[in-house]
Image (cartoon, rainbow, N blue to C red; front, side):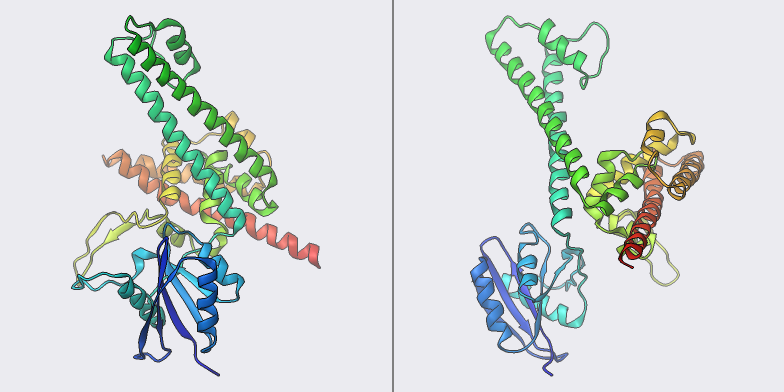
Length: 380
């Protein structure tokens, strides 16, 4: 039986550099040149490599996405997408080329020094694109509102009573009560108002699309989304974002792995008897970390179940409700204890967010295991 060869691909939008590492530990690493980043070229490469015996492929996660992974997987080729930040780097190496990167990937892949990332399936990838489009729209909406309010502030135009720029009342006041003598300023105001209204319509369309996606998503995913909403601070959009970014949460065997995946754990540089820890690493999923930190602010308040949270918990199981209630008590106590020590509130909230990820893991795993048991019973 022939041993497996290891192929490293340095993937760019227009070309792919290819290197092959022989199975032996100190075996030759051959550069095969570059090919166009096109399906037919990849197909020919796989056929050529397959003629020489079994092989498996890796490439770095990047802006080209997972199209290459899906194509190779459909052809029966084992392919792994590796985390760029976890690729070993020589501190003295100052020369970087595509060919060297491909050779380094092949060599590190053979040595087992690379960490593969989770590749979403079609359903999770589609949901992730939609959720991130909604996030981009939300940020554009905030920018549009700020441009309008700052334009009016520069010219001393303020409503008679204080009101938030995000309310319909503020926009109605602008359209009905603000006028300028100069036509250029009238045109500017009209454009800013139009951008705010356009951003609002865009948000409404995307949130409706998310609602439709929840209705049509697989039953298991929908159950996890509903279960996560039992936690305080996590409503529909936050729950959908978590599911889209994580996929199947039970792939993490322990909560600490999920915390590390989010990049919310402390960096450390310890040697001998010296132990030195610093700020969070941020080497993880930034979208997941953002959701966790935003939700963590809710735990500065005393534990309670308001009308909104009660409505979200209607379909939840008693076990999920118990986990959510335990989270309220534990995280509020942690927030109070750390703030009593005069810690910075932002740091306290980050610490609470890291622990909140443990409760997210517990609820998601509980729901997924129950669903799997249900499927097994139905199959039997």
